[in-house]
Image (cartoon, rainbow, N blue to C red; front, side):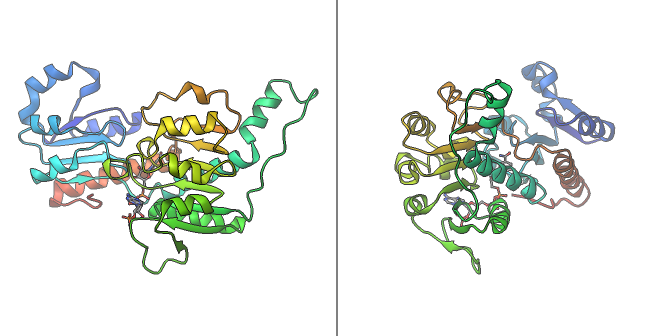
Length: 309
Ligand code: NDP
């Protein structure tokens, strides 16, 4: 029987199904060191997620590890280089979450501009009879800049057509055949944009890509929407710009040190804070689980994965 090390809980349905078909060691339910001392040499597969990751130290600890199967498309928390050095394939769950992450990004765009969360707080606080909200900003017809026109970025761009928005994007290189304008200079894209949406990967190659210069180029007329990773943004610089009013607003699903959210943001009316829920719908999470299991079974049956990174 295949011995699986599961690094963190997914849904109850998934946890049960996995344990019914394989021997599963649940590291979060017991003393991790003791578990590894006893079972490290028996472990064939690691099942993890973008959230739980997999370090080089753990990979090194498992001499017979054959594959790492992950839940989520981002793999910045998995040491893929350490796995590849040992010939261990890593899989993720791309495509099936594009729509829901793009829907959420668009929700953040609309919320930032139209102050929906703020207006909701206003009604619930009983302030409507005595006061008014300041006028909001229009969404339709505005300029949408996308940093990372990949699978999710394309889905965001597609949604913008219903809002008659102009779209430009920044990647390291232009997307062949794209109908959208390529902007090689990120600062120029930020200067042009009303909404700058981040849909690039996390990790070292994009760390603090959105620095003070980019934030200032977006400026008081602009909003930053982040559904990628907190590491992509220089978070102290973002907080400072918002507190000082140098940036118009922000819609954030991800943060530098989750689940910690900078408290200075809590009282800012022009900031929408979500707890990393980009893919968190019943339908999408089920599709992600199914793709994880399809990768696991393809590897066990044929030695190959459907969506290896
Ligand atoms: P893709 O690989 O399809 O797209 C990533 C895009 O980013 C590519 O177009 C790539 O283009 C661009 N990119 C990569 N590096 C850079 C860089 N240094 N500067 C500018 N652009 C760059 O990924 P997905 O669309 O599938 O996913 C994107 C990310 O979204 C994930 O990695 C994950 O971090 C995040 N995510 C967040 C979720 C949430 O819950 N909030 C849920 C799911 C995903 P090029 O290579 O040409 O530069």
